[in-house]
Length: 250
Length: 168
Image (cartoon, rainbow over all chains, first blue to last red; front, side):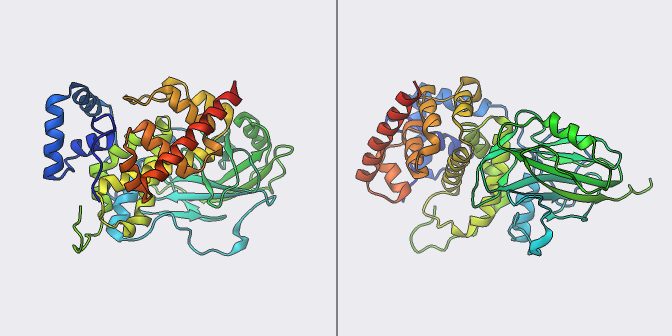
């Protein structure tokens, strides 16, 4: 099988241009592309545009390099981890993002309609975390949800001082999620600051679009370390409580 | 690309990322706004880690990665699909990458019909209408006959037309 190079109109495919830029073409393919580019100004323009597109692709991060302690809601991106993911996976030859075997009762669901998974990147590895698991400043988390019915999902958190913050999405409307065999990965990530104590992370799913502000208001009324009441009428919820250790003395 | 009978070298995912991460991100930008495209970039490489042993060497690693990215974007979009959102997402500012022949109308029609379409059918549509691939190349990539590709494109045309008319 050969790799396609040309569109049906005789121009270079985007894929061919990408491979050209990445110096990924065989000598025969390179010759075909060079010949075409010598005669086709539109494709040259596309190639120039491709090269000129701004890309701040994160560099590969050394697995030993800890992530910066990011105060939420700073850069809401799981990215920055991607390079590490690739590097760690390649170096270790292991699969990432595979849940480790855990007892079935670790879910803290208030209803069977919504399950929240919290995935943590500690600078070296990615793993799922559960109630009571320790975290430290600088750890980053992302959320996956499993739903039994379509609805709008948001995640928010409360730290030990009662400070409430958005988890996912960190801006914009609630995320519409439908049932799927694979849990749905919510966009964005958040990094923990150095406030010690419990970090309560709560996901809610509602049949109608739900505002982050409503969940944050409801969470402000929750007593620290108390049992979580139903937060929003008509909505399913699930939560995970993590424990952040005191920062080490400098 | 490997020749028949040649052993296939295992894929180095970190090297793939260095060489082709930008390509994956640009491809994802065709389907999603910037922040989500960056999520897609990460998720595609997680998939690559899982799937690297399935690389058969019958195309270049870049082409293989491009296909994985395209399929992933299509699946992800179908999971996200809601008519109102798709109407908004079809606005030009969400599609920042320069696109040659693929116009906003085609994208918009895809977007509106996305939810109800078979992902394989959407993939054929993307390769044909957005990427401009020949039917022969699409057939080769998907391992089906050229006739099948032609028939499915006709099917897609009918479905998109129905979706467009239904939305008016």
